[in-house]
Image (cartoon, rainbow, N blue to C red):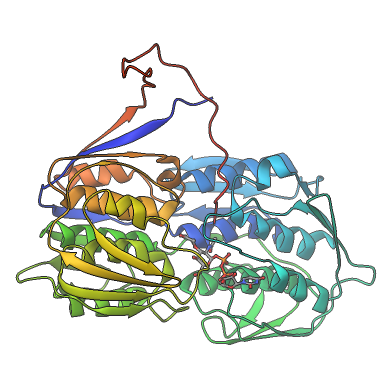
Length: 446
Ligand code: EPZ
């Protein structure tokens, strides 16, 4: 039971200073389940404080793992005590990435029973390629009343897996299932995102034999035993990109620290086209604006293309640029639901299928809005920071799934932002005694 909260932003403050980027959400949500494959305890460092991590740890504990918080952003995880191989709907629906428990449990125990992940506001997101990969390795996957039962009548055996589309989740799940399978697995048309390389590096640090992660062909030779390791999660490239855009949208000057600039190449290239000045250092980028922001055209693509997870944030920036910009969504089914909320702030955006046309108006105005998913929430935060007047953002649990202490980090950069409980109002708009409401299920988890 948690009182719903909102962010209240008084816009128009220029962001200045330094911000430290946390560990990558999309890496850690795979690395935490991957500890199930270890035959000794692991220490995971640079774990971001986000609700998707809280849920992943809760699932590990429900399975029987011992998870200890041993230092800031650091956990010791011992999965040798796992006896339960089932992730029920109540846990799986809270986080879409719960599907990684399938690959990890299957890879370790040869069977599992995991609920299909919950619904998703990003449109239809099938998991047929995950099932295809498991089947190629010899698994028998059956679905019954929302639960996926996976067994391996003859054990897991290495094989050739060709994905029909480039998919991050299925690539990671295939790696998890294949790492202890007998013989050689070759994954073709694999996704190449930095979090795939990070999962492979984590498993290799335990003694796995994975080659080619980060290219479209990954080769995995199965091993019998994975020893304990101490491993630091990579910095979150999308969190970094979000602060880069926030700095630019407010005309600020911000040093974004603890990043891998190579992971930011496509974001840097697009932002430079928009007229943002970016200096790169070994593990930091400095973002500033010394001229007008200008229109551009972007198509989102799998890595190394411009990430779909930055599309809403860059749209908010293009609302502030001069001229007509165009964005084509090349990865997700539906990723323009946030547009209605941006329009409430004065944005002029027309959407036709997977294409959005943005007329840069040069300004936004504060309004009450709702986050409909994680990156939509990030885009509204950016819009609110740049807008004149006050913006209130509801349904912020979406934002807290993937951004560690976003209001604290923004406040340290000079933003005027507060988190406040939502007080229900009567029909006459009179505040009533506040009720404590059950926490909303995280149905869009990604
Ligand atoms: C990952 O989702 C990310 N989530 C998403 O991050 C990200 O948007 C997405 O990759 C694309 O980069 C995590 O890493 C936890 P996909 P995932 O499988 O793995 C189709 C964020 O904001 N497809 O790469 O679920 C699918 O429909 C989020 O942090 C199939 O058809 O995405 C989609 O069109 C949002 N069948 C495309 O592939 C399948 O079996 C890419 O999906 C699997 C996918």
